[in-house]
Length: 89
Image (cartoon, rainbow, N blue to C red; front, side):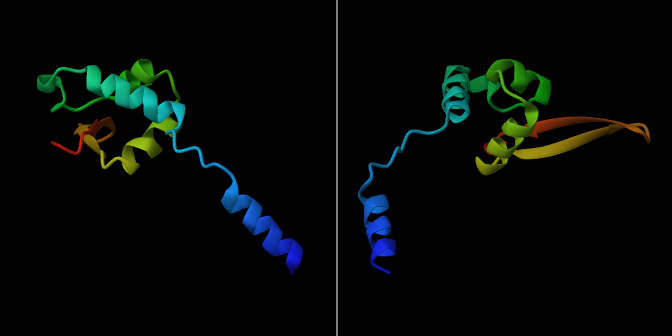
């Protein structure tokens, strides 16, 4: 039991890194660089992947955590276009 308490004390005394992950920092930098007029439109995953230099599976999780919404625009019965909407839209 003493070893467990010592380990908990060691973990709580360790400095905590409060820096956001690199993908979040890149996203925030990219988003801040956009003019206000372009922040109210849909964004395709391909566009976000190119801007953030990351895979869509990582970007999608981050966007959902930030309140973005994923939508689909259907064309016909079989083809659709996926896009992401910022929380302000």
